Image (cartoon, rainbow, N blue to C red):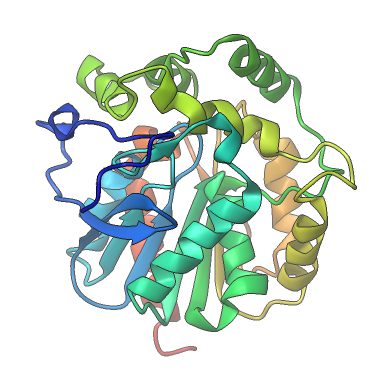
Length: 303
């Protein structure tokens, strides 16, 4: 593939050697001059897993290990600026571009009848793809500790402190940020795996940029699109599963969690993942994967 553009950082491949529990080899595609990575494993109906801030496809390894033996094809992309994907400098990032990168994944891989699983920033990106962009390709939705940004959503004290920390810390400690959102702690090797994509300060443009893309007023960029997503979701008839971590301090259950439960036309109540923090895939990944697999099995034949 082509060399990265002058204003784009490409993490050396040797940074991704010997990742704990994540031996899946990446596939690559070209989009808008960027080399973007994704993992594609298993066979069956596709399950697309979208990560958020500041993680990458490595986050989904335990979930994938449950879904693939159950007969599902798992596709976990690295958003631009994250994981093995190319990393533009800070001012490249917009909500529209992140959405367009995921739309391209669906087009290039010719994905249909997808179960879309979203977490954190994967929510505003993926739910827009699933409603106003490519609703016809997505048949089922799983939402985990995420939301939709309309410019009117309240952002709690923990998020405000996180935003201030990001704004004041160019060389973000990625492993520390993930650790702070895990209830049960991280092994050193796992923390290093989250640091692996970000070998220089320039490589951290994506994690630095995303908090600032959340609209804080109704007229801010991205807010009208978020309201469109909310309107579409409220009238949606597709099967939906809502999972939430018991100990999420970033997006607490009794705030954003219950708000999402009211927004989504769910056939069953929110499913609480006990003992988990914001990055519930780290605390309870096997349980999360088993819950998704069981839910997919329960709705098979009912659609």
